[in-house]
Length: 153
Image 1 (cartoon, one colour):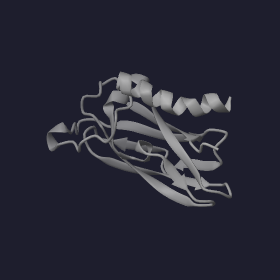
Image 2 (cartoon, one colour):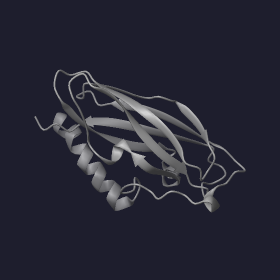
Image 3 (cartoon, one colour):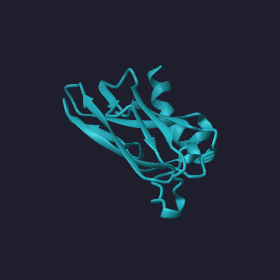
Image 4 (cartoon, rainbow, N blue to C red):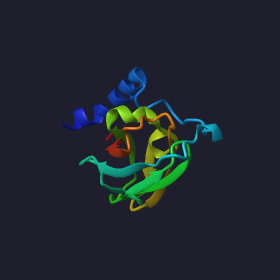
């Protein structure tokens, strides 16, 4: 089971590259013409940690109403509960899955592995926007992160 869980991270990365679901990195800042001030979209946040990663991980805000096209920021707080340095990788997912193409991450801890020293706590920022092209029938997006241990011990 450990080998399977460990293999999920690179397999997910490959899947996302092929399908374009997650994107390959930061998005560009939206322009002022890309704002739809006539509506709000609720973005919900959560986070889970794989059982082989000794971390606590949660968003500092659970929900945020955003105007499509405007940049928003939240943070996630993570604590390494181990007595040694540990490296993890966050894998994002969006619900509904077809809403993923409208959630644009400009800065995200999920773009890189995160290494925490023994007992270290840090806040990891997330800057994003919801595209103004999001269909009118999508009023809520849930952004969820799953953190996996990437240590090769």
